[in-house]
Length: 311
Image (cartoon, rainbow, N blue to C red; front, top):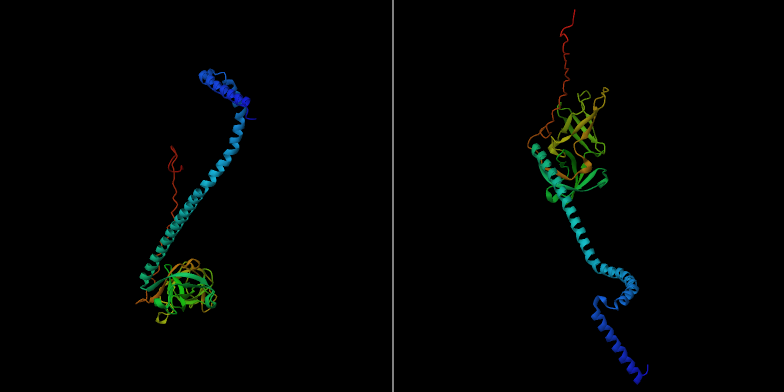
């Protein structure tokens, strides 16, 4: 529109009308004649506004989520770390308790036999130096260890030291087929030689082919000259099977060792032999067998019946 006199007059007129409408609307309040027009505009423009709001809100939420996701991720990471630390702490607590129990049992066994021991931990298992059943322990020459020393744990005979390094050693386990140790029966004192059969089994050849032996009998080490490689009195195992005697010079029995070779942890190397043979002192007292209850018969008398049979 050109800036003419007519256009200026029209602009002034429109401004005057606008002010007049505003004045009428304010003075009319809720009864304002413009209210119906305002509601009509709202009904037309309201859905448009809601649609725009619905379209904009997810964007705003997404922006907020992106903004807060860093904080939430950090919090989740912190919680995961705290949970992992707690699980590790609980696990290490169980581990420490188990090791403390093993050590306590080992010390009681060593004390009962009068063995001077050097404690060690099993740190490896494998076919070292051609042996099929060996473990590596974290003690060696610097700890006073030497070849052909007896190795025990809280349950009994573990094996013997075969190779010694500066800070580690190799132990041949008693269940190895190349392992042999002299044994003595607890009750009869019959002598024999135990040989490993792998797994959790030993075979014992008793020198007396007529030896009286039965399942459940216990054996200990007989001991070696100068206490090497074996000190006397170490629990070996319990008889599980007795082969029939066929008139041979020896008799064969199967023995289940006390030691679980697949779960070795804390062991003790006997660095000082006992001053005297402990014989059976290291064996734990056997629990007395519970006597089977004797069945009892209760006779009930029928009321009115005679206690003695009629003639």
